[in-house]
Image (cartoon, rainbow, N blue to C red; front, side, top):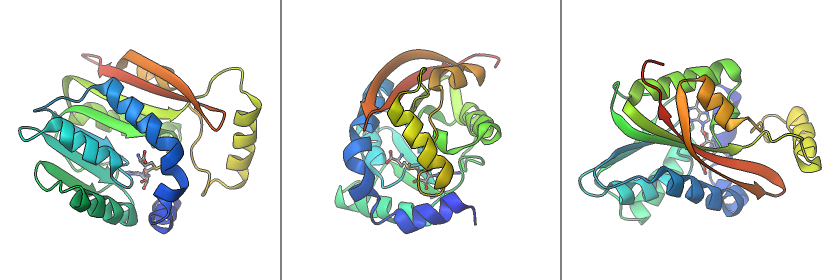
Length: 214
Ligand SMILES: C[S@@+](CC[C@H](N)C(=O)[O-])C[C@H]1O[C@@H](n2cnc3c(N)ncnc32)[C@H](O)[C@@H]1O
């Protein structure tokens, strides 16, 4: 079992208590930037405890579809309970699966979002995740990424975070990444971005479109 998988299983019941207060506003910022609309087919990768999926299903409405995928069975259970509590029953699909092998057919989605998930992957896996995004997106589809940003020069908080990450990679697992540069390198054209700080750490929300022929 990959460590990410098992650590999020253990964290799942406490995740919102630990992280939602700080990550939630940035997840919402990313969704506002992505502008999901009624009738669209939408996917959240690393759907976590399901906050984003509830928002996506409301945006997609009765004529659209919102899907979520997460590698952790524990996170999927918490997300399923949230969907039930929010009375979201139709037009939503939650899959226990891997971002590196998305359990969806090609050209299925209008838009994909990920928050605090892409930066969990190393460079080779990140390329695999973004290749999967391009595969399941329709032509001219959108991807919205919210991630810890590798802003230069690194501030003292980023350096402290990096130190803790190197010592406790299982628990402090996100790595700041140059979000726009990575998306451009992997076949996406950034079209909108917003930046902020979480506990002094730079965070970036970026929306990009697939580049035709990439
Ligand atoms: C830092 S949490 C963020 C959760 C959620 N996006 C949010 O904003 O609250 C990262 C999520 O990615 C999931 N994850 C990690 N590796 C994954 C993979 N290979 N495929 C799908 N999900 C994965 C974890 O289980 C966890 O739920």
